[in-house]
Length: 438
Image (cartoon, rainbow, N blue to C red; front, side, top):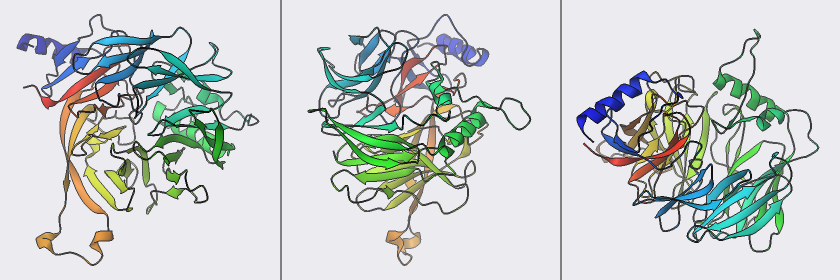
């Protein structure tokens, strides 16, 4: 890309408001503010990559699976060629890609969004599909590492108190519920505050819920946990087929969010992974490291003031915390496959950090803080291991409407970060190269 082309893109980034439609969406360019190459992987608006902690990659790391207006598609991560795997005319949702086989899982439902959901498995190479299961209610959220179990959540169908209604009204542009609410003065609340109000209403409704698994070989359904807490964000370990993480949803400063359970020891109650030590401390947007050894999450002590990425060692319970600055806080963080670097997808000024300059995609390098002169405090090995991030900006997200969360995540080779963006109008899938182009 020549200097004139970079200058043209820079001018467009400054002049065009977030979410506005433009006639030309570039395919391949270098961000003039960061020097990193960005590639558009999708062909048309309405395309989307998966939520940041859902696997969208084949086990061999050569293909990324995304959704498009036409159906399920794959992107060759070397050539960036886009190919439709399964054309789907009815409403569908891409769920995830298996960790063991080259299989993309998705679900379909009636056009009006009601009734049973059918789960399909599609071979990424041939496009051949098979039916895995049909569920009358609930949502499938994860698959285990050997692809023998799906896991999902369901709510009591008798719960008709209206607390769920707002979550059924979705804005397809942002893959979010509408979350509209008014304040004490009768005026509409900003989006972030309205979301907190609606989340709290849903939490306080105490709707009976259950978590369940479905055997992908037999279709057998088994309930594994019941509660009136709001259960959500199920994630199987990418390496241990019997280890399941889930969350208690709701305003983060009010709930104990992170939980871990073993399916092979049903008599053992779920473990709370983070104990709050101060009022307004929050933890969430958790994910497994690719090797399954660590659970990472966003930690704020307190909310909106002091920012960390925290780690919990699954085997030992040892804890690590890396500090970062207000502008570097991100809606979602992610870790590279080798664990050596992290990413963040930024946030706007209305979000929890209220960052004045937070609309960037970041690359973070972690640094530990060693004992001075090698002198250890008593019991130091059992204490939290502190550290900090140094940040590099990858993508200028000034034109992003953050109601669409970018959901950045590393490719299996660690060389790119895939994200979704509306910086040029409709939602498209992009990737930014971790290595600098200039």
